[in-house]
Image (cartoon, rainbow, N blue to C red; front, side, top):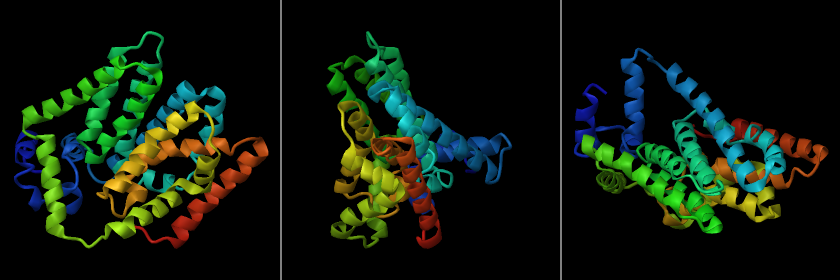
Length: 305
């Protein structure tokens, strides 16, 4: 990014057709982050690799904290190994979506922590909203991440922290608008670019193919866990990812590449694997299946990611 950050933001929508496809499909947040690394002297691919690896750790920690809050420590302990041994890990360390997943997961965790606190903590909710807002300027699809906290708010009959989170997210979008980037204008420009590219991806095929590809990323333990999952707490955690995935699939804006695009949501659905980890022996078998599935995906499935 040769232009100054302010000039880049002010001209992002007007000049969107000049950028590469990946940049045209996202808000400018991640480009700004990489430009910041570049200006600090951290150049080349290594800063991005380190960032992705660190983000993977943040994701696992955030999901475990949320699982403990909603489903209890025992269930969280059963889930923990499956957050590491999963086919989705293949793409967690190879794409910017790992960064989006980390920012959004931390935001969701803070909001849910505020919702489950004894008296509610709007300040914690606002901080979570700020992180969710940062996720929004990285990927338009992260707007769906608000579904999880909204379901928890309904379940707990507590709206204050959720309202605070919405205000936090709005504050980030307002700040970017003041700097020259309007999020809604950016979304409209991106949708226009989709029309300009005119890539033939029929909805009737991808509405099912996306779910099939996503199931590969989720792994056999995650898929089997969805069928065996019981209890409101575990389902609330899984809903933080399953709800957005189903919405994204039905909306039809995601057509292909969902093993990568849906990573910020897949990590939450992986929690369903805790339902099959009923003993040490069965846990080992399911972990072996997860690892085997990952090896098969790497060996036999052609992917750019």
